[in-house]
Image 1 (cartoon, rainbow over the protein chains, first blue to last red):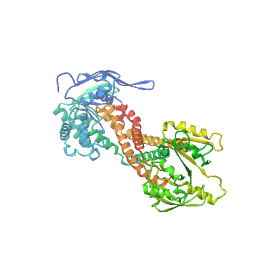
Image 2 (image 1 turned 45 degrees about the vertical axis):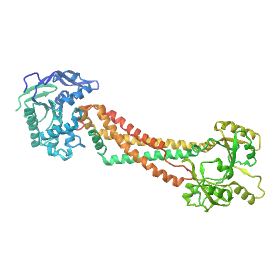
Image 3 (image 1 turned 30 degrees about the horizontal axis):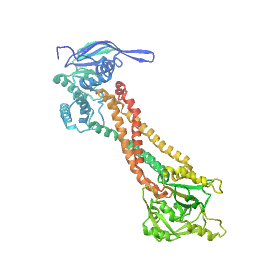
Image 4 (image 1 turned 30 degrees about the vertical axis):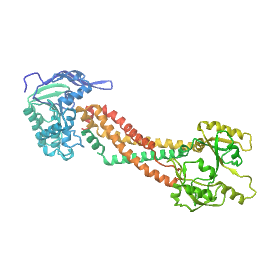
Length: 232
Length: 386
């Protein structure tokens, strides 16, 4: 872990939704830091605001107040198109239901975010090959998502998240749709990314076993940080 | 290349749906093209008319004949180069569905006035020599298998009884717009036969005079001079350009033409609505995928391009097949109704309109879903999966 300034620095973060005339607070004054090479698990009951916090960190939602500085950039101040560019260059996504394009092969899915980079087609193919080898799916490059198991699909999604070599990876219930054994494999892979590649991962999970893979466990309750505990 | 591959794979994700949409497009685009072809054929007579010919007819009605004696007076009108005449015969060959135009003409003057009817010299001489002879268009002869020397019996509807003509010449059109589905025979044969059948019949009558002029710019002036000649006579005349005369027939069916035009566009609007529905359904099903693309950093423009590309791709396939289907359909129409529509052919203009219609359908169909998908909230879109 890096001793320098944190990768993620959140201060006074608030998020509220409007339903008619009513304003429903979801996050209330969150302060949170996460360093380079840190694996942070966000836990909490349904409606606690953990997914909202993850979406704000990922730059796919806008806060009502506060700052979210990631790598020194306050993404709360970026426009939609600036946020899109920022996500393409700095962020990898891992979703609960993998969110792979069903008409694209595993290799094509991994190549997708690279279309937004300046890499040539040949360089893109090389990178795709490396990423699929990393997640041990080199032999499944030409398989379509429906030809892969859930665990394999999630590994393709992780390869896709890594393709542009972002520092930050956000994972929303990455094991939520997997059996215990496959989930453990995926968590092991995420741990490797932190340990061997120095990636920072912020993961939302309901599963205490999954949270145990993280270095830090942040607990949210009704939109506030309830406690920060050491993973089991 | 990658984006094109994604677009093609998306287009055929639901093969049956895409196939049915393409079939709908083929039907709509070919129907549109066929109707446009019929409309063009309707106006073909007017388009093929000569600017150096005027038609003089009875001012009362086209069915009221003019005296044969008017011919000499017409020749004396300043600006008139030559004069001929013709009567609509309206006979039936075997059965009414074999309809084709037949005219009794003063051949010696009529043929020089109509250089678009190209006849080999020997056949022309044979036709002029034989009072019972006829000259027929190339397409008409081919349709009924007529050869030189064949007898063509016609049952008269205006001039009763059975009339028999010998094919002495077959003409070809000098231009593609020339009607090759007509039959001409000698007016003297008609006149003499009628005189024989009815000796008490009054003087010879002419359906219309065809007046050749030197300068098309003087058409209106010459026409006015002709009509002035016969003002306050027993048979006043109405002279107009051949094109105006032909358009007069077209205008009789103006309501039908307007309705046909409306139908041709309604067909396109219907397929536009069908395809817009298909594209909207497609976009809604892929809501989470578009949200994922945006989450990965793709801008709204990428989603818009994907949807427009897919819609236009389907429209281009459907449009191209529809255009191809129009060609045999028009041929089939020509063989069934060639007598009514002598110049049925799919013009480059019609093909261009079909292509434009297909592209407009593809573009409009994608507009609404593309706009919606470009504005989807990523968080809401991703939740769509769960």
